[in-house]
Image (cartoon, rainbow, N blue to C red; front, side):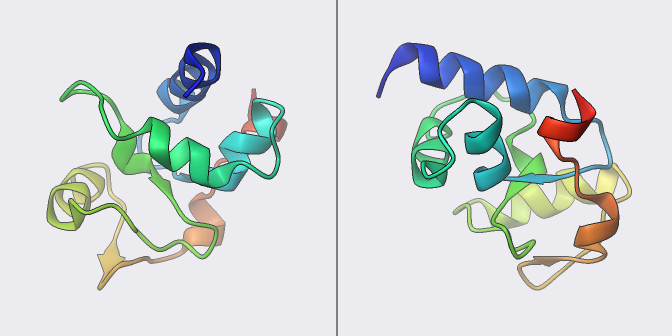
Length: 101
């Protein structure tokens, strides 16, 4: 994976406010690669413990990461409710980097 792409993805994710979520696709669009949402997910395979990866989900508001329980706990601590794998009120708390940066 290109290190510049990864750095741009991480920079966007660090900007997501607590209590808000965004999608892999929205991040891909924000860094100029609209059809590379899977690459955004791949970039998130390695990150520091305090990195807010839990604020990223798929375009339907579903948590697809293998650490569902950990992400659910972190989101709950920020006031975000998750039922099953899905973020409740996803559209209401969605953070669009193209509109909010």
